[in-house]
Image (cartoon, rainbow, N blue to C red):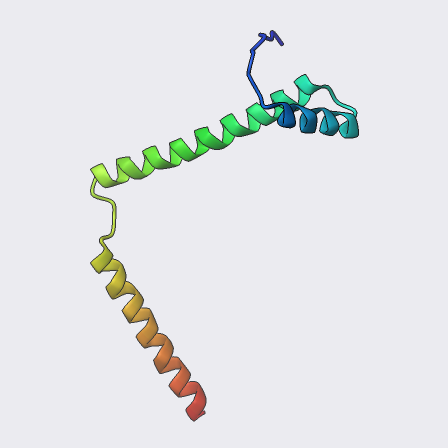
Length: 90
């Protein structure tokens, strides 16, 4: 795998914690930073993909309004109340 050098400025306290973690894990700073950056990139990419999908759904009319959701919840609450009354009566 081809690698590139990337420079970042970190607070000294963070570098100290990084070094302590590297020592405990018997890994290099570079290994830990690469793993952390990969995890962050994967997480942010997944989140932005999720947002993009939601925006496409909205653009294509696939969404529910607050009013739709209020009706949906009210129906479920009413049905649950009926089930509870029947259960108490039985």
